[in-house]
Image (cartoon, rainbow, N blue to C red; front, top):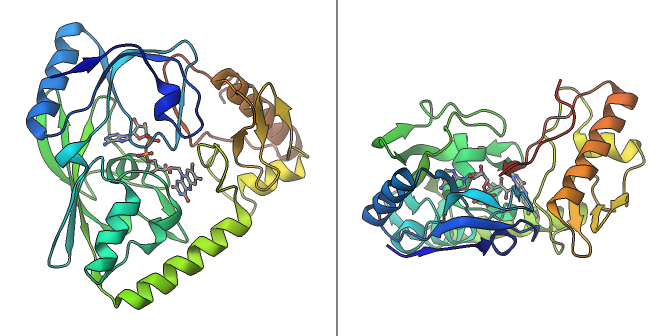
Length: 293
Ligand SMILES: Cc1cc2nc3c(=O)[nH]c(=O)nc-3n(C[C@H](O)[C@H](O)[C@H](O)COP(=O)(O)OP(=O)(O)OC[C@H]3O[C@@H](n4cnc5c(N)ncnc54)[C@H](O)[C@@H]3O)c2cc1C
């Protein structure tokens, strides 16, 4: 198994920040994933999986871990009947195209979520009142202790949350879809993509939603907009002028710039709304927010 050293995580994240990973492996099969996990155990390294890095902020000083990116057959997609079986590293875009070509609907909501099947399980990703839990049959979870299929219920999915522990890798995902005419799928996707483009920054370097929506009527984006935070800038990072729950890498931003913006956003939301915003973005390496309730 080939292990790369000191690869900057800025290359593996959509926001484009993050220092080097101590080690990076790109397993292409379950056997190679097993090798990678054994390597990490022997070297005493933590394991961090990176999908498309589309909801990930990695420390500027780097990460003392084995970073794993699933490729090859672990990024492939197969359709059997109404079941779509994807490698944990398969992109949502490829899953959606394969489903559409097979005349299977149900996954359209993921058209504007730029992640992978496995990353979607970990985050229980969702949009437009649907999320992974609505379409997930089961997932193959692999760790240093072995591998097992877990049902949607066993994965303990709720709003942007799963019960997956650190070091557990989603290697395969089975989605249960339903027959739907290809033209209808195309129309729904075109409609959702147009809606997305009119409300969120889709052509900037971001990591998607910064914070989860707090309970109650008003979402995190609206709240931060009412705090006057749109366009607020620290270093090279800016709160999006289009949607205040997004941070854009405007000009050579660092992860520290993003964390400073997050701290400021939480401070203002606490002061103005009495709400403690909880981050949605996953942190990798030594990153911390200033104040935890
Ligand atoms: C423009 C934009 C729009 C977005 N819109 C949405 C949206 O509408 N809804 C939404 O929910 N999200 C959205 N996101 C966030 C992001 O796309 C999702 O959270 C996505 O599911 C993350 O998948 P990923 O593969 O990129 O995971 P990563 O960002 O690489 O990782 C996220 C977390 O999942 C873990 N992980 C990744 N792969 C695996 C695996 N195979 N096994 C175990 N753990 C794994 C990582 O360790 C990390 O903890 C958006 C992001 C962007 C940039």
